[in-house]
Image 1 (spheres, one colour):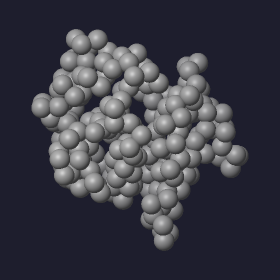
Image 2: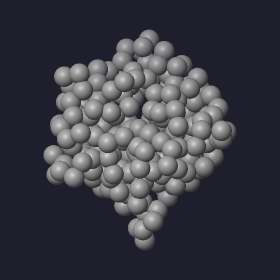
Image 3: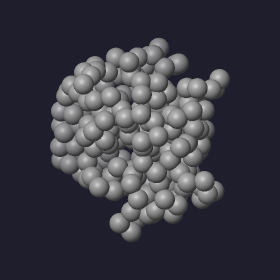
Length: 225
């Protein structure tokens, strides 16, 4: 077993600084999740009371220490069947094993510009899901892209096998971020709901001269949709 703090995941990331969410971020978190402009392609905006409860739960998760075995060797990971996400983590679980909320702030001014989700979906620490919310006035400035790039690269470097992202098929901004980060995508369905599933894998990621590009190893050899 390995016990990890989160210093390896956080810190400087270009013009940004990443840190775990804290109590002082309550108002920012609640404003994001209750803003219909931010949530319009994510899900229903939360009421004030629901946002506060969500923050309390997320903060408790951030305060938990991570203890997990090392990921299984590459090649033992799951394979996605074409057209259906038959073994993506949330197919059999309703909640991740561990969920973090990471705040991205401008290194020069400390202004908070994004909130990222970093969720561990398997007991071995091989599968992680990333996501980001950015306040409406700060969108289209690259904050989600830069935050998620740093998080994905660091997770893969530390032994993750597969980084997942998902968004609605209509979320053009989300699709653009995933593609620019080197994720490969396809439209899938779970429980009657269709969404874009994006995957970036580690099988060849650090055996090449360009580790930042990521290599997908979870799809079959058919063309992604």
